[in-house]
Length: 469
Image (tube, rainbow, N blue to C red; front, side, top):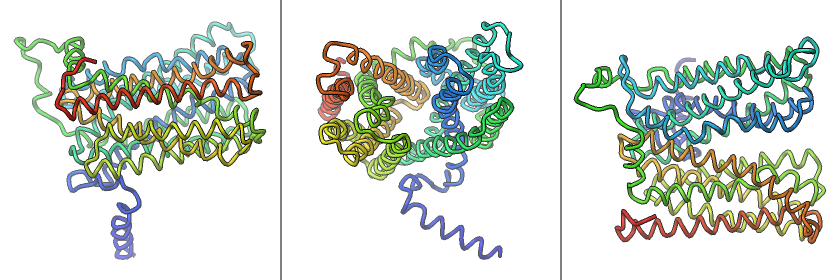
């Protein structure tokens, strides 16, 4: 049996790289098993994202009968920490530890924050609802405790993901970084998809005790996944264990940020990330309502749109990993992603005119594919553009701009849709009018992304490394 097991493992190892392009990142120093173990932190992040944005959004409004305005505020609280990702990355770049680590302490702190937030969250939500045993409890206690739990989870997620990606960059050779990025984000999608299915199944028969079990189970799973990811992952460095000499001043974030932004077209790169993420993100919360109101799709059919977008994104990441690992320019890849978004949103728009559900689904898959190319390209470009001493800062800047733009896109998409709906031109093209307006803004943002990205590539091609932004 042992011999058969070894043969099976060898066979899987041979077949894997052919069907998983990012598996090519494996090497003797960084085998695939170690990469998969490291990527477990992305599974815990995906689980947290699904729980916060998806599962609890519905549970709080429907089962716990919490006002939608309060739910919206709670869901948005984790985004408050997004701008601090650059600072978190910088701190992990310059951290000195008695144990000789710089990334592990921050990932561990983020894990504890995430775990602590989930540990108190179910009780806070029950008190917030005022149901059963929580009836008569002061309302401010529920609001304050729920807000603290969401803030803790948000701080933990942003810390773990920022520093985890920096650690992955430290471990991977430059030529393998595109495949490492692909693997990390595929594991994020896997964590989101599996978590969504499990949370939906476990909370189908809802009662308060089950809510406590599920959320605190997520807390335990977070701890387990992240400990597995960290175990013997970062090498200890004796120089980091020594106290900083008195003659060596404490590094300043302002100085480090100034040095980073004076780098080769760094500001243009951040503009590209922000514009493109906003361009793909405005319709995130509008695809399902569009399908239901404009195309008369059933609830079951619109629910599958999430899988369509995720599937397209997964293919985009896999394709980008394969192409970038052969030396392709990551900014060109990001430009192609934005370019793919143009026919994608055009198809979504024309699906209303043609009343065609297949064209709409094709457009959503194409949008996911473009978003996958764009995200992979910009993240790889960020990883490659940063000096080794500023990898954490650079990835934190990417995460800060990306997360803030994604959150702004979700909020602004709904605001723009409602503003047009209640305006004098709200029904010029029927029920699709407000959606057309939002899709037009997305197309304009993607065109702006292509223009800025093209100028960035021209600057690099002609050696204008410090062109004004």
